[in-house]
Image (cartoon, rainbow, N blue to C red):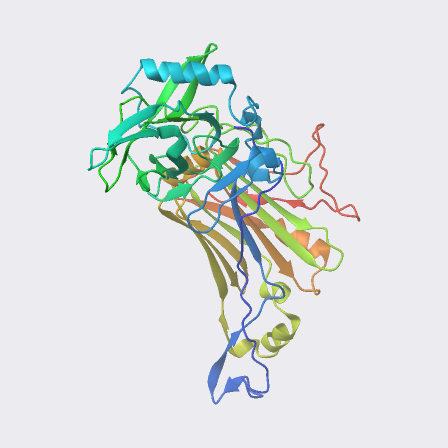
Length: 453
């Protein structure tokens, strides 16, 4: 699956600002509070920012899915990542009349076939329409009634991998726009019958039908209804009363053997990704070229079943607010220092993944927990990539750009429970292999993160 260039945002603001003590109310001239060493809770110079994504698509908190109409021409990167799979217009938003006639005739000639098996998470849908077959039934008084099934099927729901029903907007047996559905594996499909005012949950099948030399996937429904007044249409096993075409937005329906290589990004903050084999971790750590502050951005792209721990040796005198550091420096011999930490947590396919940022006296630790084979398989199925964390840290005015670069270049990373099959310390380069991420004074902003064995 093709990877987009923009870093997709899935973001949680993780910084915590804690109240700082002052020398007047927390400590006496001897550095003690009634003879007890003081405990200081420090505040950051600026709250850290942390993001989590896969294939530049935001991994949101809780259960999430997306629905985009092609006619809206969405510019959201989540849509653009899969836009190349979008179906062409046929008769308006539906398929052509020729395809519709072929499919409906095939279904009529092949009743009670198809399958309920479905292995896709991302796909486009396009309405085919219905057969408008008529059904006849009697009420409890013996009166005859004629029902056109396709006219009564007025909305559709897909039940996802979490057993949650998702209403598909603007769809009925008469009309439906071409649309992209993301992160919704269909484990069941149901429609609403307006004639009986009921939801029908067990009258669907997926058919693979060859049309014009190409195997296409269709979601097909058989009409049934019943009313308290006695009318009853049990269904005839012909799944042609409403048909929706499914166009998978992927090359394969399940986990690819090798994750695709992302395209070269067009922004200086995103490292160039070299061609690599399956199973690797790629890291980029860079100072940010801002006018009014010093900051750094860490990007960790995990495509192997490992957790990581990064240590950035920028001590508290540079990441804490300067008024707090005055207190620390004055009474350092009696200091009992409270570390600041915060955790970003996401549930991915039932697995809890955490990223914890800890601000210790000696520097900053960024550590993941919970990245396993199930998480990575899910990310590849849904997003076509592994999992990515990004962390922005901000520093006070007492550190210079050159000092920051010197410290960032002493950063390390370690892995558990095993080493990744390949570790890449990525730097931004142009097509000729030249470094490109420099600030206005000629300092190379990309830094070395050394892997610890």
